[in-house]
Length: 196
Length: 282
Figure 1 (cartoon, rainbow over the protein chains, first blue to last red):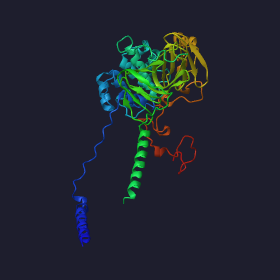
Figure 2: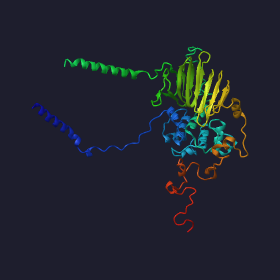
Figure 3: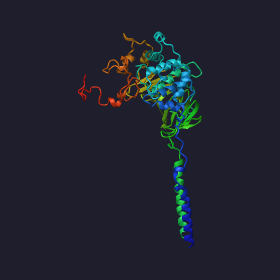
Figure 4: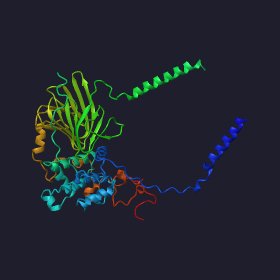
């Protein structure tokens, strides 16, 4: 008798528990519209290491890399518009290709050379002084300074090549300053542990 | 019930023993190889990150941290770190991605292999007191140390590699494609092709000979524009820039491009079939 009573109580409890779940879902408030997720913040080390695997550097990559170069390591993040605004404020972007480019447009060597020449404030030789930093002359100037490999100005820039340009440009700029990469000095700890 | 008690106790002991053994197996350090050694981080500056293996997450590097074989290291802008590898001291320079490929005792030697994907490294290798087998491997060349300090290796895609010796001793560079080997004495450096250091210097400092249209040799041969059957890109004749349009995969948008990929399909270059209606002027 007790067992039957218990079964009845249990079934009643289960039914009561299931009632709210059976209510129509129409009464629920509508879900808020999904917002675009902001890009996950990435460190500059992650950005440059992942850039090395890209076959072609895009305009967004170029803008971020140049922002890091010009600001000497102060990041503005992966936002293309913010990077462009920063470069415009620094006087690098006006009249440059990057100003009107789509974020996923590929970067060419000549266009990158124009931006690098503007970032470094290189005046160049007689032709560049007369004609301004047009892509071919800017690339020749960068090749002379050994910050870009010589070649055709319309070729696409590889991701790893852009990393190399940023590295060499910063080395050239910081030579003789406190930011120069120092020579390695010192001795390893285990000197003398393993002998011949 | 009393008869079953010893049986239940036995099962519990067996289960506990198995769990303890499994736990001990999990807790064992991944670098259990007795010949394997660790690199110790001596100094860092800026953003330096590491991961113990390929599928592991990246974490910031701290001074005193031990990095085992297979660990990857990457550095950010103006960042660097110094690793103590028992027989050698290695400085990973900015914008570098490097892996500790091997770091182990091999008999009486310490065998070290650094796999550098991009960037620059400097090294001091103690040859006088320790027998070392030290090498830096890049995608295009291998630099091996014959006993020295002031070793410098750098590699970036398209730029290629640069391998040199600033201190005393001797280094050997082997071209990974052709197997050509050259040695660099103090003050000398070479490239990916293991070019003789004297020729490398000549290439850098002798004047570039331009042709009658003021093109230098590297520019003339770039992208097959001259000396090949490849046609000159349309961009040079005032047409759309190269690598544009739907035929090339649409990598770059051409502002003057009025034809859509749908319209283009079936009208590829060389299609001489007469269109419906006979074609030509009506």
